[in-house]
Structures are given as C-alpha cells and as structure tokens.
Amino acid sequence: MSNDRAHNQPTLEHRLRAIEDRLDIYNLIASHPPSADTGAAAYAEAVYTNDGVFDRGPGLTSTTGNKAMAALLASPDHQAAIAGGLAHFTGLPHVTIDGDEAVVISYLQILTPKKTGEEVEVPNHGASRGYHIHRVVTNRWELKRTVSGWKIKRRTLRLVDGSEPSREILRGALGTHA
Image (cartoon, rainbow, N blue to C red; front, side, top):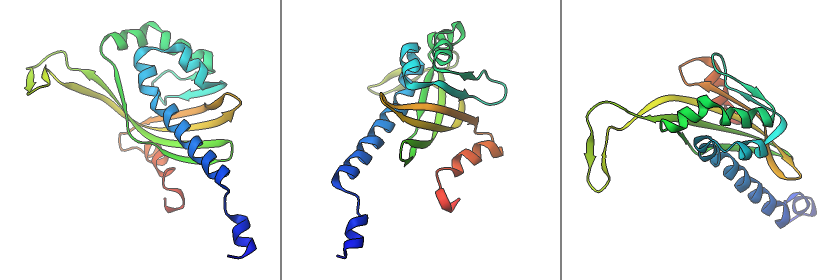
C-alpha cells in the first residue's frame, strides 16, 4: 500500500467516533416518539438548541427555541392528545454526518386509538378497535454537535400528501442519486 493511500485511510479512532456519532444520532431520533407521547418537556428542552426551530408546515403551530419546544409539549392541547392515546411511530432514519453537523431524513406516523367500531380479537393479544393513522409526515432533522452531545438545530416536517415539499425532504436521503 502506498503511503498516500495509507495516509488517507481513517484511523481506528476516527472510525470509532463515526460509529458513536451515528449511534448517538439514532438514539436522539428514536427518543422523539417516547418524549412526545409522554410530554417530556424537560427532555425536549435539553435536546433542542437554544435557537432550535420546529417547522411543522402550513396550518400547524411551529416554534423557535428549546424553551418554546418544551412549552409545546406541556401545552393543554398536547396533553389532551396524550390523554387520548397519541402514539408517534417512526421508521429507521437515514443519517448523513459531516463533521459537527448531521442531517437525518425519516418518516413519522401519528396514530390514535379508534374510539368507535367493532372490536377485533387477536389470539394471545387481546381485543381492540384498532388504530387510526392520523397523519404521515417526512422529517428533515438538522443536528449540531455541542459540548453536551448532538442537538436538534432545526426540524422540518411535511405532510405526505403527494405534494412536492414532502418529496423534496425525501430526496435528501438519496444524495447525488436524487
């Protein structure tokens, strides 16, 4: 192996840091559903940057700042959604890391229990009326490494409704192949 090629190979330390970063980011994204579904305001405040933006798109309330994000989770409307059985369900995210910044693309479904209708029994799993898929969105999470770990600088979500904004977010996971 030539010295140039050996010189351009990442060290074991760099490779380990890349793996640790990816795992930390997966855990950050995976923590969103439990934090949203429990109204964990203090957690939301800790994982957003002070000037972090949550852009929910047209027709929904957006916020700026980690304290505003915490207040959104503590709001009476969000607490009522939790009491009604709110469940966020996410898919495996696509993660791109560039130094101290990362972009994550993911899907998210919001489910709620069906309150009416016939119950269906599933052997060994009980009976239920099932769930209603309230909405499906695409997410673009822009993250920043801080002294206290990866934090959310901006989260943009768009409704999967056939429109261009949602598809544009998804194209971000395809790199140069978009």
